[in-house]
Image (cartoon, rainbow, N blue to C red; front, side):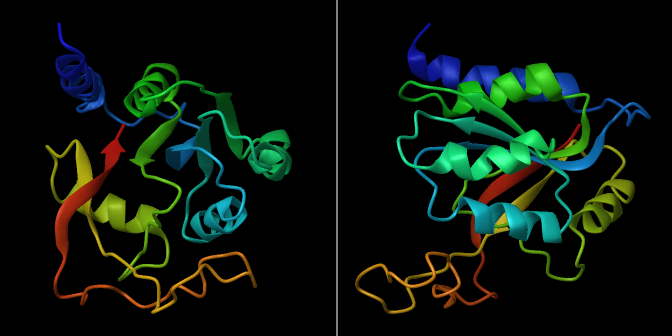
Length: 191
């Protein structure tokens, strides 16, 4: 089996195993996020705080061999149980990390969003993402997940990364109109 076949088949097979499972009272979280990171220290605190504000209850963070201060910044959230941290070295391990999350934690959350550390789940009509996910899933009884369209943001005309702040607040200009959605998507699985 070629490496590309393995990448394509393995995630789909795991998604199929959780697609039609009913929610369980043993689930710890309504909404969790899985993310693989590498050297995201500059932005990771803002990313976690933002997602907690919009309803994410837990994070599965796979650290792909960071050599900056990422783990130190995550430590308070790891210690209080908001983050399940896994050191995940090696090249090309993103899908392996996602599949590991599904194997180990698929019973822990009602919804599991698969996003990157430079992506933000932006609620449009609701403040709490879980409410919107519940609405979508309840009106589509056979849905196994929700695809979320991208809306790209640009550099706000900046040529170099600003030294002040260190977050993404200075990068607020959308590179596309909200009317011109990018049809590539991210996934939030109904686990």
